[in-house]
Image (cartoon, rainbow over all chains, first blue to last red; front, top):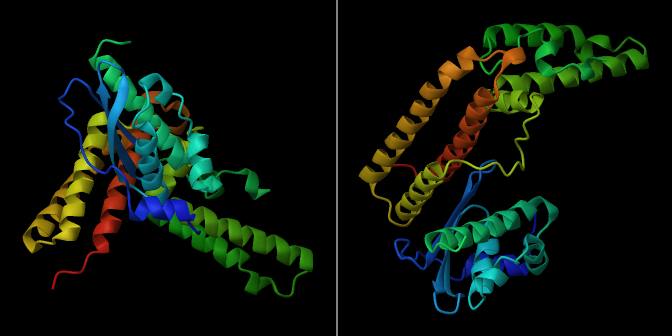
Length: 129
Length: 179
């Protein structure tokens, strides 16, 4: 199966790979997995507590090229967004942007799950739920 | 008509994650001998087609049941558990552990240390054995018609954990062999 150029670009030059200090109160961490293929994805956001805007986002993904590209793209989109706007990011937007084939849609779902998990973690830590 | 049967029924075996492999092999070979297309070349076309269908089903059923992970996945599907593309989640501490394993693996890939690699392989094997040991009582207690949701959850989690370990092992096998 051929990867789209955009997937290859994110795969070869992933944006925002790394770790944020998860002990910090304004850092939210989402850890999700796709057990059927053994993928694991960690996505973290650092939020400006005053404005509620995501000022940094990092990810680390072990999985196929599409899973890596999906999480890389997700971190790009997250930066500069208010957390409530970030919650609106839909996996189909990732599918369209990366031109993922149907068999790889679950990779984008994983990225969406990771975004939601990270935001939920941030909200929980800050009593925003 | 066989195609309506599940693979266990097809071989006349009790559906279970633990199977008598000898019994399975015996039935498979008996079927193969009876239905192999080469043995029916003089029969009518319709008859030949039927034999071919049965042989094909026999092969597919055998291959699925022989391999323990495939057998378990198939069994869980009989219980209505979706295995492929299920989006089922594993406990966070297990995911955390797999993250750490993968990180270590990536480190070793960049900078392969003979001793560390050996230690990694050993730990992986230990984890695999532990998983196997933990699930055995569940597999032994399992009965097709009275399986509880808890038992099915445990079996499903076991299968997913095996997939993670398998992935790590596959990756590990692409490393240069110890010189």
